[in-house]
Image 1 (tube, rainbow, N blue to C red):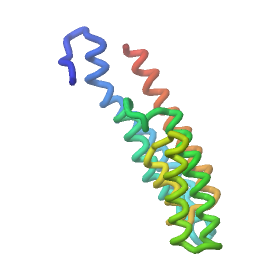
Image 2: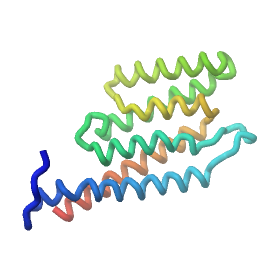
Image 3: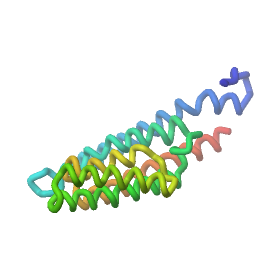
Length: 169
């Protein structure tokens, strides 16, 4: 339940204004990711696929990290583990397309990402989208580096948010 802010009440100020600050920082982080993904976008003719499709999972992850900070999926360790699993399994699925075909690879990726996220207690749903993007849009090895960059950038933005809140509070 939200508390009504009183003048001079720092806890109420943080509770009332943190979502706005979080949304602002989250937006800047995603714009930076969009810029980099657009800059490194390698066309299908070069064999790497479109790296910017990975952005959809970062948008969802950013929302979870910044706007739903109290949830289990917003924990930093869960976020990092889930993206590691999603990136590795997604890349394996990309490689398997040449051997097993699209549908079998997609099924394997979805099955193993879901199971591994559950077994490792890393339930961060956007990581499933990341893994599936590797298969769906032929995102090769460059996708792993883009995922690492995005994870780093979102974690840096989250640290900046926490620092700003600490300074203001």
